[in-house]
Image (cartoon, rainbow, N blue to C red):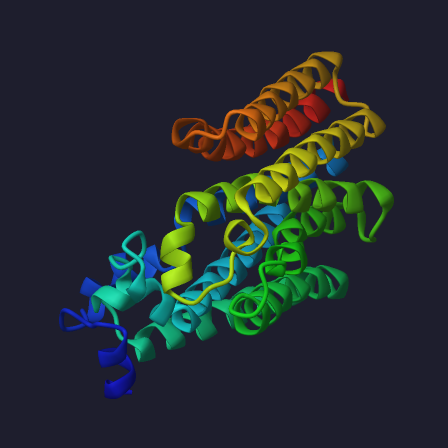
Length: 303
């Protein structure tokens, strides 16, 4: 274990006890986890409103929060050597030595298992969906494909849509077309989130030995994938809102948000500057948050 930690450039003694809590929380990428939880809550409310079971929603949200957080921490364990080689990520808890590999692994395993146990208390199908998210993210994407193929985000990206599908399943008790559409909308959005980052840091990824789309297929190809994914994703999420009968105001807002995101994606395609790429990266997260808020409140106000 000591040799492994030295290999990823440990610079400090790991914190212990309560002092390690901030670093362990950082391993969960709270902003990313929070955004995924918004998609799950939005999908649940969109389906269940106006008869929202607050206790069931709270239990399901906690299950997802623990499962996603634990999985993200384990991803950090698997990627610690990559993170140590990239300036953008070298300050993360593992490569910086704030926590040990053992601490992070135990935290990730325990937290993931706790999330799965709570998911099972909700329903077997909900557990299956949450478990599928962990499987695609940790094993398919991180452990298998990330270091082998630039197409890893297309398959591993399925995990990004699982929280939305889980929220729908939690309310409905089955998988249906709208649930698949909600998940697909998130999956199609992922290129705008991931490929903009990969384009900006392509040289770092290359030095770390990670094949990313812009480096392998070219930046223009990556920009095309972003534009296509953005257009299709916004259409799918808007269609889901229409099928669920959300308010007209919510539909108009959802369309407006989609048009802004798509306009930025096209701008990056025709005028690929660092500034435009950075704006699109930030706008992608704003769109996903706004879209699911529209779906949530649009459903509540319509019923």
